[in-house]
Image (tube, rainbow, N blue to C red; front, side, top):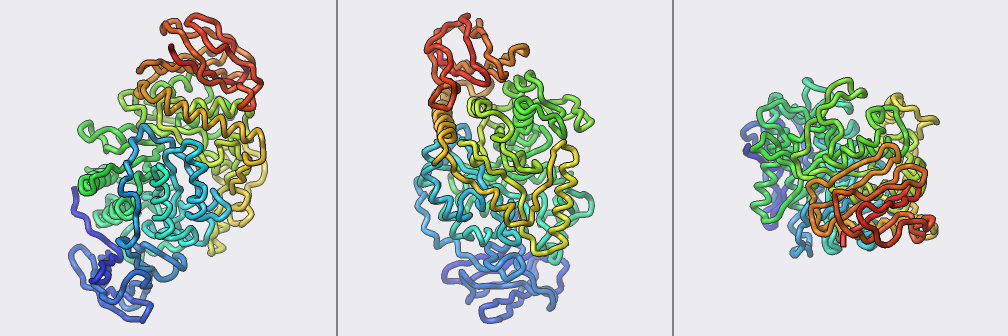
Amino acid sequence: MSITREVGAHFTSGRGTTFTVWSPDAEQVEVVIKDNDKIIPLQREAFGYWTALAEEAGPGSRYLYRLDGETERPDPASHSQPDGPHEASEVVGHADFGWTDQYWAPLPLEQYIIYELHVGTFTEEGTFQGIIQKLPELQDLGITAIEIMPVAQFPGSRNWGYDGVYPSAVQNSYGGPLGLKELVDACHAAGIAVILDVVYNHLGPEGNYLNDFGPYFTDKYNTPWGKALNFDDAHSDHVRNYFIQNALMWFRDYHFDALRLDAVHAILDTGAKHFLQELQEHVEHLEQQLGRPFLLIAESDLNDVRIINPREKGGYGLTAQWSDDFHHAVHALVTQEETGYYQDFGRLEQLQKVMQQGFVYDGLYSEHRKRTFGSDPSANLARQFVVCSQNHDQVGNRMLGERLTQLVSFDMLKVVAGMVLLSPYTPMLFMGEEYGEENPFLYFVSHTDKELAEAVRKGRKEEFSAFAWQGEAPDPQAEETFIQSRLTRSYEHNEQHRQLREFYKDLIQLRKTALAKTDKQRPHVEVNKDSQVLHLIHSGGDPYTYCLFNISDQPQTTILNTQVEAHWKLLLQSSDARYGGTGMGVQQESQTNQEIELPPASFTVFQSK
């Protein structure tokens, strides 16, 4: 494991603030304390690090670095940018926050029911404090973990967060460092784990001053978002250190339980030890120091189990990764969409396969990619795959930001929810799906650079060219686009939406109870292509749980699996009238070999007696 070094401004009570910055090509570096315009020279140390102690600087002090007597820039490792990315950084004192989560017991991954949210659109306030006010709603729903889209400082006040330019600074318009700590503390008090989405594959364009300090980027590669970060070229040890320090900060100073690593396939590293493995090793070291577990969850476009395989098997050892195949298999089947990457999906047997093992493409040829793709996940634990039917990418990267609510029937929404929450994998919901939110989730930014804003508009239109979507893309820069994306919480006055939310509540409770002791490794899955019925049998524990999904729009008759001899009692059916269904459904008890009548677009759950 490499030697790391803290960077940024670190305040120690009674001592002052130590400023450390990496700038290997600079001849002179000074810190300018803006409170009193005092200029303090930094001393050069090994590998291009510069450091100095300022006794008079403390929490709240504003500062800039001056490079070679001319260029003044905010701190690349700033923890706070109270006036945005172009202005002075602020010293943050982490030791003085009054944490109350000393007795918080981190949840094991198998207990995670994740709820992904965007701070700016989850509430009317668009702040961390706004989320705190809504935590009772999430508790009532049964959520055990929230995943917060990126909060690293970006330009303006409206952004998904993937245009962040200060990875360690908490967005000022959301509530800054203090507001984020208050949110994490409140979540732990409510029994909810907290995952932060972090971006280590690129930085946004506006306010990105890293090149002024050193070779943070490389010309060896390009990403879809511009130049690649330097993880394997000359001086890359110190770029790797910069991001490792960021991850450790979120765990240590903000008490996060897990990090979701955005698009790790764009972390381009051909070195002997991949950055992800090195990051995992440092996180494990912090676990030993603090005596509590921390999770790293990767988003990957590679279907590569090396990310989550243990190091003794040649893997990087991360906790879990997203399965895009699960989303695509479900989405293409129920919507019949077949353009873009959905051309690789849409068959019932693919849903069977992904339910059984986690990936569809495990070494198969992909027509969309025009190449053989993926690795075999069958030896991995089911909980290592995070699955969903909607998320910020799959909704927000549609041209009109339509949620599944707009694409399938009310009854099919419930079927899809059952597929996610009754799967053996770690389930994730996207904010608002639990009641059928009808507002879109659109792509929005608030760049101050007009040329950049226009480039974003053009780029979005080009992205949609592979899909057969009709209409005009909303303007990402317009405030109205952002406002349109806010949740309405329509279940408070819409009866059908209230019924759907009650259904989600009961389904989540069912997962926590009926599936708590079943085999989380792999269920038994069968399909009947003629009737479009899927049998999902969790048989690893006693009692067994038997789920029947009718994915067609017609009533279907099926027979319970003859290999599982049991008497079955009904636990839940999506067609129940209290969930806005027709009330038509199966009888309360059934037996193996007995015919079962399934209403259109419905699912039924039995448990063995």
